[in-house]
Image 1 (cartoon, each protein chain N blue to C red):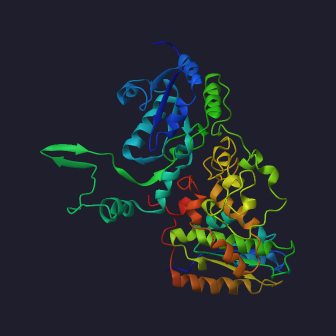
Image 2 (image 1 turned 90 degrees about the horizontal axis):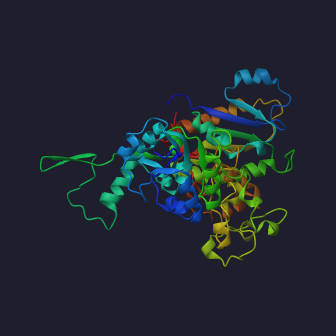
Image 3 (image 1 turned 60 degrees about the vertical axis):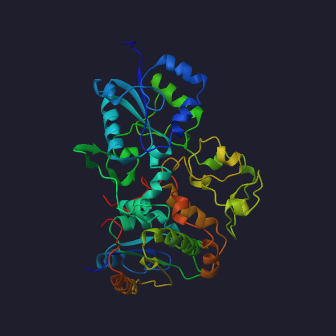
Length: 131
Length: 323
């Protein structure tokens, strides 16, 4: 397959808050900095797949260190339920990845995306989703 | 001709429950029948599609269509009524969202045919006969409606003016919809003729809902003796009321069954099933991966539960669209 398309959401409180956002955005395609990982509704992820994403990467604050107390945990629970629902269409759980860490300059974001793209490349295209 | 407004009532891929709901209008139906000319109602009256075909375009004031669209006949009737009607009302969960038969979209047409005509244990079909749209018997051509690849809601086939959800819609909302049409008091095109808020808003059990619901285990309704007046979610039973439009009249809640979501999403929401996932996550009381898994694995058939009535029209359902 061609290089997998990864949509990346990252929390602004732990990721890239010291970086030049526009410069980083020019480097990373489909990168969406957001206010909190807990802001990511299950709808955003389904929408990403409907728009042709092969995988979605979510970067949130380290556990116990969410700016809004538990946004990262909320996302973790949401992903668990969504992965369970997606299984009905054989959409593999690995297509949604959550990384909870801190990276103020956002240096590691391209690496995380690259690593996930490699793993998704092994899975191939989503067989049932619209491209 | 009487000069009264003409009304058509028709079923497509439905069970007849929606037509029954119209009959349940009782004496209100007599008033309606006095005020309008019913020009088509296959389940109750002997009018033919040819009668409708002979009408001028837009001659029917209101077409009340229930059921989803799964085959070519249903599609043809839907398109005919659209052409002849000024207003089309999608009536009931099947017409509005695809309904419970819409769960067939979890499988392909091929899977369904193989099971029903070949693989199911009660099937005896040694010659492998499958229904065909056209077959020749004794030099005569026999036809059947063609089975489409997937179940569709009415608005995926024709332009729909108004929606009245429910399985079936309750009589008070039916009477309101018909009266509003006759009195020309309909809201903006595309509106659902039902309340805007979630079912919890009017649920008689709402006052027993704790400040914060904390689900530590999830039970199916038959696994517990559910208390008849306590919020289902507070009892650990999944209830779609938090993500479902109000207006049903609490028929399920009143007989001690949780909401299954037949009224579809609340106003402004695209997909009730996906919102249910987000909402449910917020009330699961767990933090570690292990604890989260322990609770979530108690939900049997997550997708079936959340999209019981709405799969064909949902975003989630679009993840698999064979056509």
